[in-house]
Image (cartoon, rainbow, N blue to C red; front, side, top):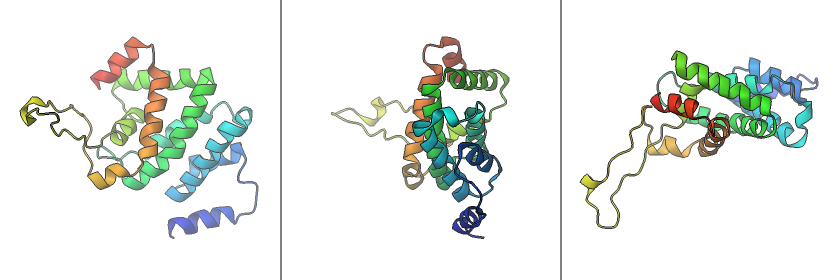
Length: 191
């Protein structure tokens, strides 16, 4: 079944599918990227229009859904990078609005960074694995330019263009979660 067919089949069920609880359930259970993306976009809409309707476990569900997009040690595939955008957009909104969600993500990142059992953090690293442009500028020689060390695998330039919204949202979420926490930022830096 094509991704659009899976989404259409889900929508054809006819019951209430666009409420926050139903969308979170869909996000947890869907196995195709089109349905996951649709559900995440719906949740993102609720974050900004009706955040009080989102249950307390919304950030946890979004975090787990993002972790499922991992490339298993390889760069996150382009289609997954696109799907990550509404997931991380919703997560950024929740973290910005609800202190308990910020604390939940901080605790999860802290646990992953210190245990070495990477899930959400690994997905984040795979998403951020984009090639950097290290061309010399203003008369510097190429030997003067020290490349940035990236611990995650690199992707092609074509793949790097996919999911740029997800990249921006991932940076936002990370900034909101780790700002002012020197111990956590040090632990993440060592990863």
